[in-house]
Length: 408
Ligand code: ZN
Image (cartoon, rainbow, N blue to C red; front, side):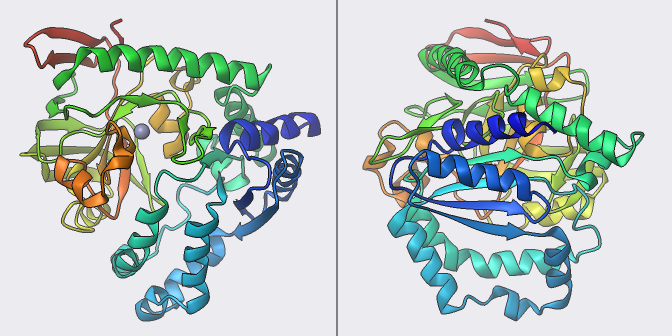
């Protein structure tokens, strides 16, 4: 990896992703083996005028040992300094930058029932803090190539070649090849055009069909928008891009209103383990039946995390001919794979899809039909022949997707 390329990528992450403003604090979450990239990101943040950049080093290896050895009680406990940190995040609203480079199988062998118990114990403590700062801060997720992840994606290449190949794929799909800033401006403008059209339709529900067996209807909420690409923070109105890359137009569907069955078209990496070839059947918006060739137990744990984990929180449209899918690479990472295919997410919905959402409380938004849950897990259902027909509130039928791609 050339230093100049890595620097350019770091600039893209700090400027287009987090859009760090003068005087802001930054929290950077990055794995211990990404020191060079981390250093460049820190440098770029200061160039943009950051006040302080705190690097929070992460390690799958250590996390796995911790999850295995520490008791549920201890793992679930919050010390005062940890709560103080949560309060700090609410008070200062630092920019959150997450760099993903994990091995998709990193947590294989960890007792997922134990992890689920810990998450459930932590959730009520974290939730009030999460709600307090929701939509108010800039955040971004981007990827970085690591040997373990690269070998999973390119098993036939040597470690060195695999790492290089994954870097190439990351930079290309992140539009980091030519002038990334200009490329992202154009890309965001294109996505904005599509969401504008989708919003103008005033869709009541979508009907998905595919030869793989998918036959699924999902209802949308009035007053809830389709969003894409970048968004603005509440209060300071800072425009940032939460995902690098991002190809999706998404919305938060009506809780409790989805019928039919969907079949996965890509494996899902959940909590460091893979779930493959699965189907989910919905009744009254609730996932009532799931099957998976691999990872069925984990999938069942996932939808049982809490009472709302079985309901949908996202409905996203991504053409089959997306730049990411066209690489032909399966990343085994949601950041990339979700931007390569139409997907749904189980769990928490997006409150910022609601018109003037800042005027409502979290409870009011939940009552409106935006799902609130402890998880938000995307899973891919886009296929080459996916057909999506939209039915508008005034009774019109509109082709949204034809043969896996946008019909407009
Ligand atoms: Zn999505």
